[in-house]
Length: 529
Image (cartoon, rainbow, N blue to C red; front, top):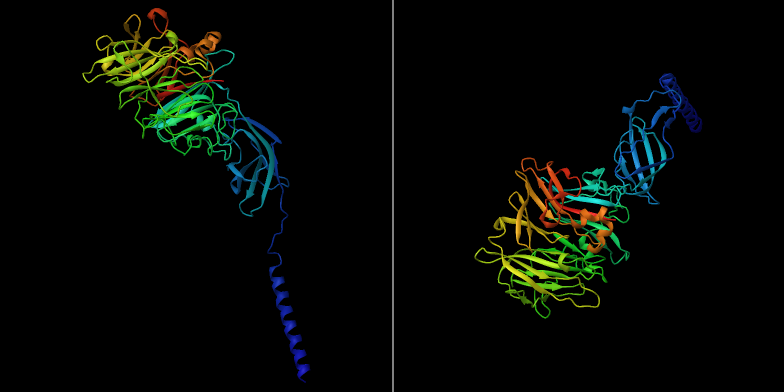
């Protein structure tokens, strides 16, 4: 009886469950609209694209469902993902339907994936394509370092190689177009602008020489490689990686040599880049056998040469010093003449520079405790591998009453063609013939503020080779360069003028058209490639 009862009970339970499930199914009949998933067609996209760095891409896909479903752009999300070479690291470069931005990618080849995702279902479609970013920048031209409201901005005036000294293409905020080779992120300058330098250099890993632009701010020193197509590696391209100990991490000034050598200056300390070790060592502003360093002036004299022959000034001991490419210490210049002892000057240095004229000469402006100013001219010829050089004091004279405005002069430069001394006092540019002792106002800038006065430093070409390439190198080799701006509008009124100083104190003429539309001009540097 028990077995029969259990069987009947089980049958009743099964019948009830069947009825329940059957009723539920009948209740839902007609409540679901089953549809097949439509396929999204991605058209107007080809397999290969090439863009020059810094240009706006123009890829505009056409999106349509293949079976008639209406396409509404607001119902979808979009991704453009780039993969460099064989890497698996994805870089999201855009979230719009169209790729219509300046590509945030470095020079190179990429696999690009376009992903379209439906928000409501999560279903996605994708299209892959090949993308190449190539370098279209020409390597010759002028770099201009601007101060824009206390921030550094680098502009590039690209030179026309078919018509030297013409600049049809201008790149504003040029570093935004320089991309990190690892991440594709744009180069950003941190801090206030200080100076530029361009020269051939190498490192311990890559022993081949590359032509680089170094950018110094009050917070960092960065560089990019012009030789390899304006490439930049954030992890490697910093001054700290070029030092023995990681210090200094940045400098305020670099004085380059011709190939693979340089001096760097920061906080009254001087460092030399050792060609053999490809590193900056400890400061060389010290005397062999003595402890500690002595502070030196930021002003520095070095002729165009391979041997890094240099003269600088001990501001504490008030004496002239020298070094060369093999130096790890400084040597006192025990030279006297014309009433001046270079080893014991007894005066403060106001400024010092060098010129290739007069077979190589240093000019130094000095000031005594009675506010008298003096001009020292020191013979400083090119060194050679076989012959020692002879340093002499050519002349030493009081110029307090001769040089108009000398007490307020704050910028100086020596002409590399005739040896004139130019200086700025107030809003005027003065020119001084040191041989004939004649001074004149070369240019009155009126209400404009002169922010920079310099002569460009060449390292690939020497002064003796310039006449052979005068059409190109006349301006960067011999030019007197002046930056100025309207202080009421400092961010867009900046101008760079390139002057030629004729013989016999003739009127200044222009080498090329002035650069305009700049900020406060801090420095300029010519690329010789």
